[in-house]
Amino acid sequence: MTKLADPSPADLQAIVPCDTGLDPDAADSVFRLLALGHAQGLAGALLTITNIVGGAPRALGAQMAVLADGRYCGYVSGGCVEAAVAGEAMKAIAVGVDKTLRFGTGSPFLDIELPCGGGIDIHIHVRPDPAMIEMALDHIAAREPFAIALAVGQGKARLTPHSEPRERNGWLHGSFIRHYHPQTQLVLIGEGYELVGLARLGHSCGLPVQAYLTAEAGAHALDDCGAAVAVLQGAQLPVLLVDPFTAIVFMLHDRFKESRLLESALDYSPFYIGALGSRRTHASRLDRLDAAGIGPDRLASLHGPVGLFGPTRTATALAISVLAEITEARAQLDG
Image (cartoon, rainbow, N blue to C red; front, side, top):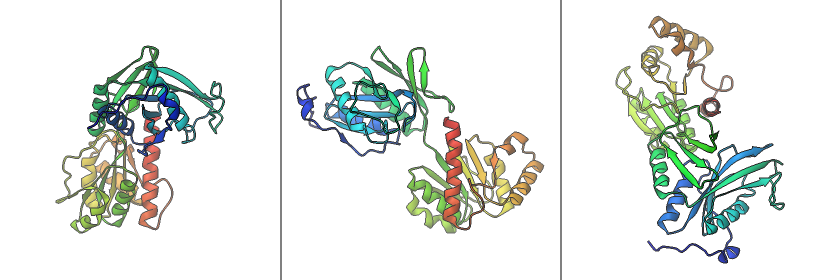
């Protein structure tokens, strides 16, 4: 691959920053762009919101990646100031020194305003270690939580290969700790068009989906969902690939079969587990599981009836309701 030269400070005036279009919500986007820049011989910078004054469209820890030739990805606002922020990052890359800049309220950049009226401090870490970038990509691909400690003022960044589910982005001993947790993974168990609808909606939102079917007839309907599909034999679950960032949803109408499968699923510790049915159905479900010796703590973790809003009459409405409830539960986990 042809190596590109970093633009000189004099060249920067002629460069117009350009959004690459990489998904700003995908944790790997910033690292993919930085890895691409390194492969092409271009320096880059990792930008992180380290402080918020008043309101801001993005959360503490939101990130961008910027390359020396003006390409960038990620959001630190609603998309309205990213090009200007990228331009300042390019200047920092050219000088080769980390810096923290204020944008919005209290900023020296009077022509760069945040529509919400707040202010954000953005730390620009220039020329991040390529080995750290590759490690980050490896952890994301393996669904392994990790954190990066930005030693603001020292020009250093260090990856720590662990992070607990409820740990929050923030300051610790003079460093800003940015946590990276896997995206929500859906494990769907059951059959019918309700399951297919939820699988399709989850896939369209970019979520990994595993489907365990209790009837082979529905397998073909999941071919276009990008889901990993397995057909269950009897009422026994195989070993599930479940981590603390997984949501498990039961969507079947055979209550006897469901009870057997639920007993196995409740041995896992996902952040969400729920089952389809009415309030009366859920009460009966809990009674059966209690009679089977399932403890009260595990029963309390079971959502039912699934869905953020009331009874639905279509598979699409049910899918939206269930995914909304899962999203709310994930927001509570992430803080």
